[in-house]
Length: 299
Ligand SMILES: [Zn+2]
Image (cartoon, rainbow, N blue to C red; front, side):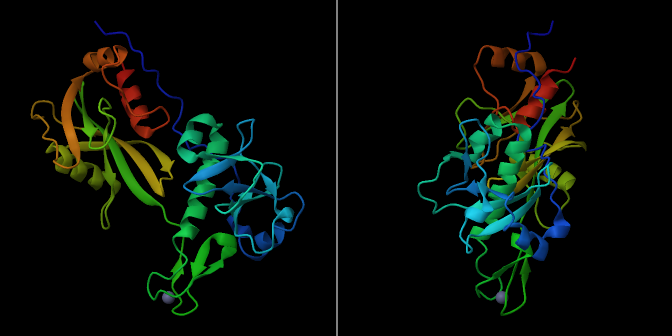
């Protein structure tokens, strides 16, 4: 009979569930004026993807009217009460009243909407930090649309914040799922396959290609499950089930340099190994954990 299931299905993935009204129509002159309004606040993005937080496990919010006029502020949107929220590049901020905590950690520690806001702010500030110059001619770029566009005054190239689609998929053959140990990951951590979507490719095609490249396994059909902002630094993780014909599913062959090991797990076997702590899953809040836990909890 089924072994005891000790891995609860997570309610949600981290960094999803934002509640801010992005109010894109205000970007530009209207949002530029909002930074001078007394109710406007800025969340602080520090160096190395850290964010300023309060003792109460909320994001720190600094009145924008207290900031110098040359502070780099990106308009993020409107809070439920209508107050404008900005992101401030606080990498140089010395003596701040807030503690700067790694975004990865905040995904598990903050309420969903706060974690989503932290990811949004970090993504925008991180994009500005690496797009100061034009990708075509190398000229210094100019910030427009209150931080949502950079344009090149020399050649006219417009650059917008990046989101890089990536896929992660739990491959299944009948009652078995395919897990792998990735190069560089903790030794006992088994996770779903994953990879970036390449130019000229759909996410579904990336699922099939990555599974074949990483394990030699041929997926017959795919089904979308859930997606997650994954701001390390700018990915969007798109989660799928990948189905393989159980009669023809061969032993996976781990791709050298990428995977240390890949194999099929029976559901009860995986549950027992987790229960005995012989293996570990990706951390709660990740889409990989969500996919595997959801599959394990099925009857
Ligand atoms: Zn240019």
